[in-house]
Image 1 (tube, rainbow, N blue to C red):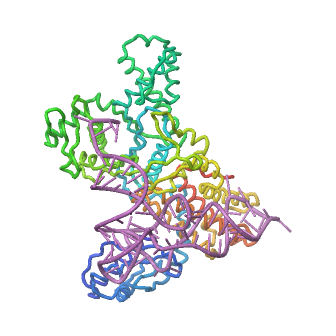
Image 2: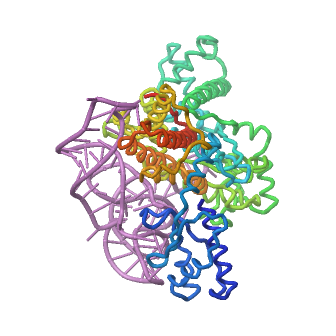
Image 3: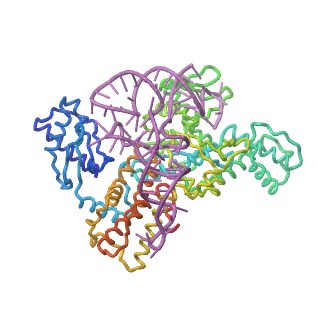
Length: 554
RNA sequence: GCGCCUGUAGCUCAGUUGGAUAGAGCAACGGACUUCUAAUCCGUGGGCCGAGAGUUCGAAUCCCUCCAGGCGCACCA
């Protein structure tokens, strides 16, 4: 609908210029939006205001010229008016709205799918926690944001692949193996000192216990280095499996798991460094190898090969991103914890050195979750083993409520997650507000069926009887749903969907309390049943993007 | 010290990329179940949009300077 208005305006503008009523102007982009005040029409355009400076004319006069040259080819406009400093307000004909409702009913679960992405191949990498411990609540936020962004982009017409980068190389993993060995010795009766660098969670003991059950105490006497390597492998695998299960139960399923270790095995890192060398982006100071990230705006150069001859994490990460592009993705989205923000310039430097545009890599920062218990900050540390796991949140708060909680806020805003509060408020959580609206609609439709009232189809429903203000508001909201998808996808801001849903549910609840859907008036009943059917379609489609269920009964 | 993020109602946050009179939820107070589900609705109060200057027809939104909080500033990941 918005697009149609924009087209009309563009045409009118061209005509005005051709007629010589307006000087040659370039229009940056005009805005067509639904004004807050219904007196200002269904849509309002600020074109004349933007043009005023360029055309050096009174904005109201420009608006008048545009208005005179509007050619309503599709016959959708009831009337237009010029208001305020020079807004052009559009009033849409009723039957156009009715036609739009029919369209929703026909498209059903396809409604809201748009072609904004044009089938572009996009990869989204998220969570990517190293498998040294179970996922905790901090990872949960990134997981949901990533998952919903992929759903959103799929709806907006992109071809998406979801990927988890497994940081299974490096010191942290070595510490994991060491930690298991220490617990292994302890369980075999040795007295041990636990260093601060090691992981203390109970899951380490469980893994050590499993090894004893299967293989006994034979590793007490074997070569320590080899044992640590073996224990690292066993523990990493077991923890990763657990992570996958937790994620699946949280509604997050990846298309690919990409191992850092594999990257080394197939010498992807070496190849990358060679390539950078040939391009002249690296230099040696005799002991270490540096990458000239400052050539691309980073504040200092970065080490890629350490004094001890091993590549840095950064080196592997560039190789990984090169690999992503090599797989044919046109756009790459990384979702990181906000504490990694200082890492952005060097990552962009990396891909630019490889010849890719900076814009091809989008990085979304998700602020860390500040975990509270009854208002008191709770310590969060994988190493010390003091943390609230994703599993606990799932069990205590529930999947729908937990997901919705994370999705309601902009990803880059700080978030306090109070466990006790989340549990206590669970019945007043906004997610239930939306789900309840859905359940109510289902209940009405069921009632209609029980009373033998046919669920209406468009052809024999006269929608012109829908004249309540809430009815008009809801119809407009339903029609604007694809625009919400578009905006959220364009800006990569999933929180817009819950806000849209809350508003739609709000109008519906208010409407429900004022009006009966099923009444003596057959014609009105039919029209209203049709309307709530389309509301249900939009609620279902939007909740599906969020990965939140749409219950029929509550 | 340098960089990034945040500052909007008592609390938690939106604000359609510069638009018309700044919104919602919680909390407080007062009302609504003989009804298609009261996990709902209706009403009331609540604001120097952190502060100051600037840009223009128009600023919560953009520029600059401060203030406060968070996070970074590794040959860790």
